[in-house]
Length: 162
Image (tube, rainbow, N blue to C red; front, side):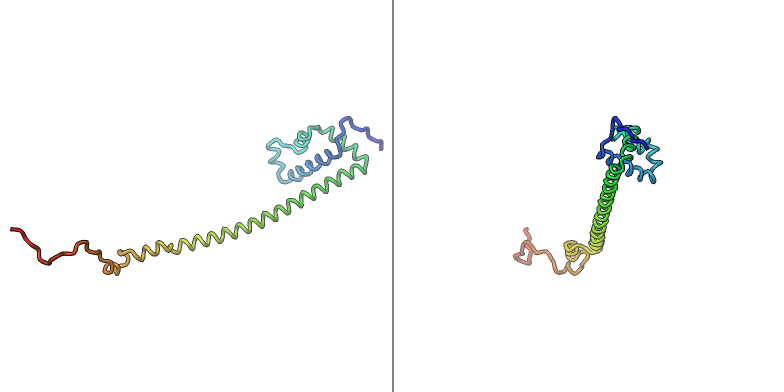
């Protein structure tokens, strides 16, 4: 196999790593959502090429060049693999944290719901006291709380003027 010429616009190793990571991420999402993306005229390779301001030929030439130099190509793909594994671990931990938070919030909401139901079933102390003091609901209160007279009569006899 002949040694390939170094492309005029060789993509750096670092940028190749980033491009390949993006291509892998988008291609993995295409499996489930390919039709959705295509309906919105989003094609994974085109999106990545636009993001990095390259074209497919530039990527292909750079990829072929690095593939000839196995050590360089291996270095690129080791970084891609490590980055994807790190990203995967990040999202696994994030999902675990979110699940723990959701369980915690669900427990709090369950207690709140139980408390609010209990509060609805039990009359509040102030309402309960008002109900006990209500003379309409408690007829025994009528006899106990007679209003005081404001004027004490001087005599039982009423004087009449001629």
